[in-house]
Image (cartoon, rainbow, N blue to C red):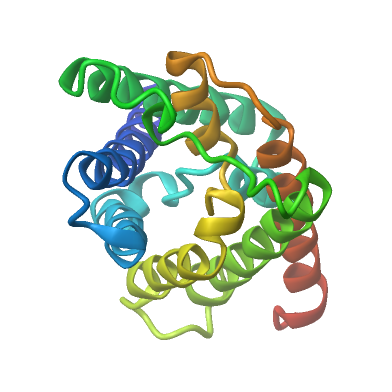
Length: 223
């Protein structure tokens, strides 16, 4: 029981850090216009990088329901374990969004505590495709750097953090660059902003699931 509790707490804290640091950077930019897209992307990447080095050896460092979904499809965890991870991740994002709401007095109404939004010129269907692609790249890097035993030791956190930064640099202005259902759900729940919420569930789960199955079946070396 103690080991399971450690894993769930690690997932809670790691996802909290992602929402607190990433969402906090968005709110800081809204308040000061000093952070910018690059700063927001770096903030998200750093949040995951430090969380992986802090907790990757405890929980695997998912901090994202689509990563957990990929591990479930690859049969690297049970359904019960995945459900517990999802609860911890969602709670972490919700609590972080609540803290940001209290700190920024709700923040600007059009920022929605950093909840992602779809560019009106893009449309939700294309946004879902882009979120799937970004999640696909993320889970592929996770399997390549943290799951595959042939990968160099000690570099998973850096590789995964840089992937998140790069994804947001490309997709942040188009979809919000969440590719993480928890990262989208937390601020949406606290701010009450639910526009196109399905995009950040369907896209990332689809992309992450495909990436996990592809890597597990075609790239991992079999004994």
